[in-house]
Amino acid sequence: MFKSLRIALLAVCLPGAALAADPAFTPAQRLEIIRIMREALKADPSILRDAVNAMQAEDQDKEAEASRAAVAANRKSLFNTMTDPQAGNLAGDVTLVEFYDPRCPYCRRVLAGIADLISKDKKLRLVYKDIPVLGPDSTLETKAILAAQRQGAYLKMQEALMSDPGKPTEAGIRAIAAKLGLDANKLVADMNGDAVSTRIKENMALARAMKVTGTPTFVIGDTVIPGAVQVSELEDEIAEARKHKVN
Image (cartoon, rainbow, N blue to C red; front, side):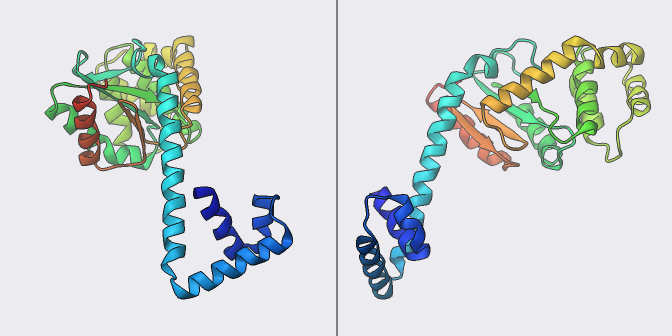
């Protein structure tokens, strides 16, 4: 049925595309499809709306199925990489994974909401996947945040950098490290070390495997949620994961 709707919609909107969509149609059959659909649309324009809605629903179903398959294929890397930065209840019954870029304005926008969520939900575990996709400044901040993890200050450095609207510099990061009581020399050395570089490469590879196209992107259970969503939407998905016991 969906194939017929697509062909019919193409026939009306892009007459030349219908034949390409299904070469089994002869030119005469294609013209007849166009005539029938145009007459039907004149009689009931809602047909076009219903066809578009059906096509969109089909596409959404396919995307959801692809996302579930990607989660299943990468479950261990998503949920059980013990070197990942974590927050909340590390033995929680539901895990929320966040792919984020520290320079992403949408990631910065949801930062406080996510912190509030893990503060209120005592059974929630949060796993961070740092992916610097926005250029050199993102890479510099990501390295600083991951290096701070090695001194037990991941969240403190994350908050400090993501609340700072200015352009990051090594000197500025050193100053923040000192303010946080960290060893700035060690931090910079770790920023340029293999462990941080490997973590970033692995996160980027996982993001590609998951077909993450923007930040933030969240994973809860077997559901992938792209974009700066409302915390209430995340709460709903967490409740569904608990209901179906999907960690």
